[in-house]
Image 1 (tube, rainbow, N blue to C red):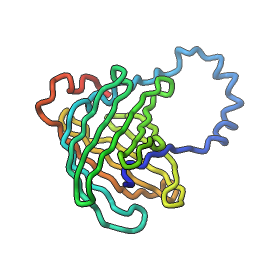
Image 2: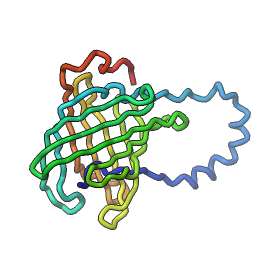
Image 3: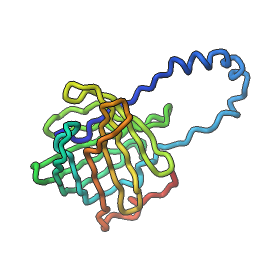
Length: 205
């Protein structure tokens, strides 16, 4: 199943480095206190801890011009690991394309202040290349670069529309360097209401 293909975006930085090198000495003279404080995002996924009803739509043949979508319904369980600095997602769903079991291990890097999303399906049995990113203003964006059907592509994974009882996940592919994106995976989660209060979000992004 081509679900949740994970990727990392690499941006060209060579020219930027050349521009900034003459300013290096000046920058080193400035006090560290003048640098903005990095946002601590280790609890970004606390909102999702618990059990959710999931409706999933998947484009059957991405980047082929196909408009055929398949639908799944299932359950997602999210468990906190390392007091929030990691979490484990388990999705079980059934639909017109069959039965699906997926797992996502999310890990927070305290040095980069970014998350890596590492996906595996029960049919594959191995973790795929992770998407890397972070949350800003209540929206998470994660990117990667990989090969799909023999072609180099970018992958974007977005988490949005976050409320205490619902959220939306969207994956898209780009085969033109990020100029255009084709959405191929949309999941809408609704919290199962018998979850304890501790599963509710307790922080502001």
